[in-house]
Length: 494
Image (cartoon, rainbow, N blue to C red; front, side, top):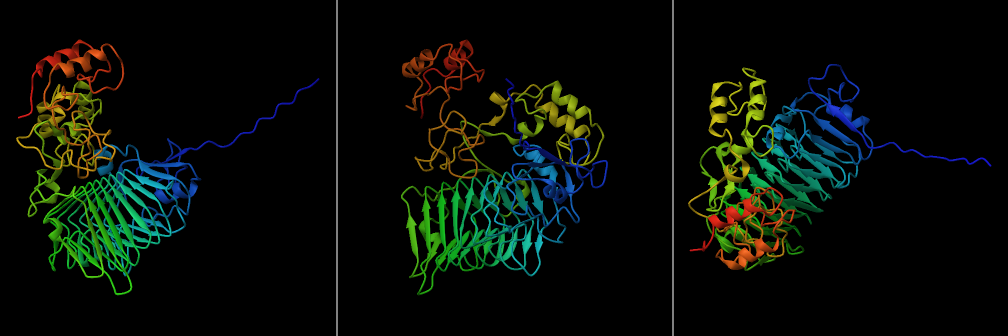
């Protein structure tokens, strides 16, 4: 008896490569023969594929006004979690158009990630960097800067759309309304973002919601935006803005209010603010008689104690991480850790030496001078043999009131230990760059390292896994952890 076996095969999702310095024009999209232009790669992709863009400056036709054409594709840099890669993977329309169009019903599975989008211009139109029309894409780990719209939404204009923007820096954009974001109908979700130094010449320096538009801000830092009305946010005509776990600080409006809520006799607008640090408190919100403000008791009005912040200074020198006596993220360490292995050693030196005296936009140019040279060696030498456990964090003389002050129901587990098992306010809340709080050996958060904590350590002795008791971060509870614990014995919170 013969047995026939039939097998069906389906094409697996693939990665299509783009390199502005590729060997051929247009290229085929393979690893060794990448496309030269991003749109060619997008056109070749099908649902589920990834378009991977190698570092470089992408400008000219085929590298702006990019249109996914409704496909659920991922368009990303080589490492969307590496700030240096993001900084060097640049989409620059050079004022000839936008970065992206989403106008074909794209859903959240259509994503862009790990890119810098700059110098976009919506001439006589809206959405300087990105336009969403009846589409719901996901935009993550991007820097969206120095874009402009002649009308609305210097960075992003949303019409009947509900995109999600997360872990992005949105800075230096401008428009008539909505210096950064303009929302008309739909709900724009903004998570863990820095929104700073944007300008609206009329309404909503950072965000403007109009005509049933809604915006939800979670764990965002909104600073030094300016407008005629609503320095940080404005909503009008049944608009709705929800702000949670965020910092709204040093924004400016000609009419005085950081946040403005305006309604007509036939429409009601609403702003909901919870567990956020709002400069000026409830008095910083202008509410007209037909509007609604929901102000939660978890809100504060206290200096957030940013690491480096001068509202009148150079925004490129700001560091909006929160000061902490227990440690804040040392971005310089992670910049010098070229191999991203949490220790700075000869492996990193080899990468630096491999491009010695080369110019261009390379991560080994540690001081961003345009050349890998002696000053880069000097910066490397300062951190030679440093490790992330001890040197990846800076100890400050004060602790921000925004640390462990977010919504108790928000997920805090992405934050490094020690913490108060409660999310931080601001852009780094809930992330591995969240500022620390407390003592790493105070496992029960009692404010003292004592026998209760020792019992917790002993109870996991020789266990392997990701535990807060693993003080040495070596993956097992052992004598290395006991040694660190002993150094903190009888610590107490003053």
